[in-house]
Length: 391
Ligand code: TRH
Image: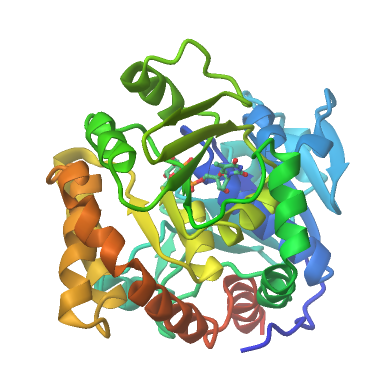
């Protein structure tokens, strides 16, 4: 479904607390940017840790508490939050990401404003069935005349959908159609020469206790494997397993069928190009997980671990949806590898079966991505949702 620019002309405030890693700011920055750039909205992004934003968007770097980046006004969310700061900026639509609780002074100012702003809690992404029932539910404030609306991303038309910028899939198609774009992109990242018949893999993850076993499987693989690892938590573990003394971007290692290259952590817009350049993408958390699906290539998801193994239910809910239309002889190796990569099994031992299935799984990923693209994207769905509340 082509993304439509929506008619709303509103002031938005997005609140983002960086709990850890890059997923909180990754989702908020992507939403803020698409609302401002693609849909002409006036957006302020309040973030408590702008450094995380600068990692995703180095050109935004600023020492100011308030600055403009790619059409978005970014403001540092300091505590204590000054009430005057809230009063002059209360927006028409207030989005708190992942129940991060906007500052009390801001919420008080929302209650003073007439009409009251639309208040959204943007939830975490899950493929579980209960999400459809909870999407759009409301929660009245215990004391103030305000109502919070729960907006759930998701994989069905009865949810808020997935973030997908207009033109993203056309951009991917142009990139895929022009091998020179890919070669130039990889060259700029320090990846040496063409990959020949190697399987090129991007490896983004939280680290893995059994990474050594997977590296051994790649070293002994029949097909050459070129692994591109962005700087981050995975690299020290790999360095230890391979005995590397260097861990910085530019580090290369060869052994058996494996060629490994440490990449710089790329800007968020380039991360899509990295995914489009690979035959298999290891992704994690929430935002990279969604981008791998827009890349329409085989991928492996390392889910964010939660207490009491709650993430396992979430993992299987996604696997059930995603592999529903997959032939049983492909579903089994895919599921075994995904489980192993999430701590239930040995990824090295599952690699060969999974690798043999990849060519056919790739066809499925194409279809899966195209089917998801039939749904309305999250920014459009959110704006329509807010507009319906205002009316
Ligand atoms: O970093 P993540 O693991 O994020 C999270 C957080 O841990 C969060 O607390 C949790 O709630 C959430 O997961 C579920 O993974 P994620 O969501 O994929 O975010 C990574 C972002 O980093 C994403 O926007 C892509 C981006 N990125 C780059 O811009 N450049 C890179 O080189 C890489 C590897 C990633």
